[in-house]
Each structure stands twice: as structure tokens, then as C-alpha cells.
Length: 66
Image (cartoon, rainbow, N blue to C red; front, side, top):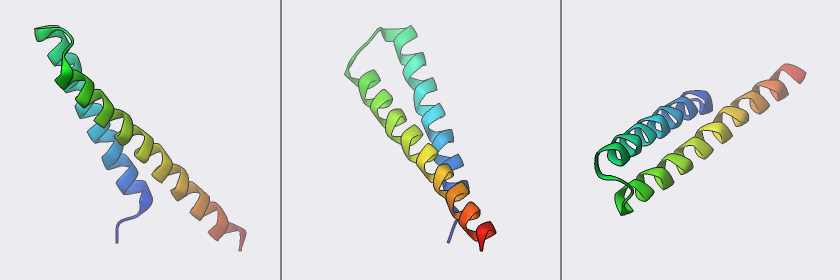
């Protein structure tokens, strides 16, 4: 089983990739439906990544408290 921190980093990386592709798409073809889909995916990935990293630190804090 992977740690929440590693999974969070992967999600942040994917969010960055989707944002990069959306930026490239806007510079080449202007705003279209595909750009909005990429940005929605990036938003979900950034949100999941930040939540998983916060969960990692919350678990680590509880373990150190014991």
C-alpha cells in the first residue's frame, strides 16, 4: 500500500501536467471545450493531492502523539 504522501505527490504532478496541457491548448487554439475538461481534471487532481498530503501529516502527527 502506498503512503498518502506519495499518492498526493503523484496527484499534484498530474494536476500540473493537465494544467500545462491546458495552457498549451489555449495558446494554440484559444479556449474550447477540451481546455475546460483539462482544467476540471487538474482541479480535481490538485484537490486530491492536497487532501492526501494533509492526511499524511495528520496521521504522522497522531502517531507522534502516542
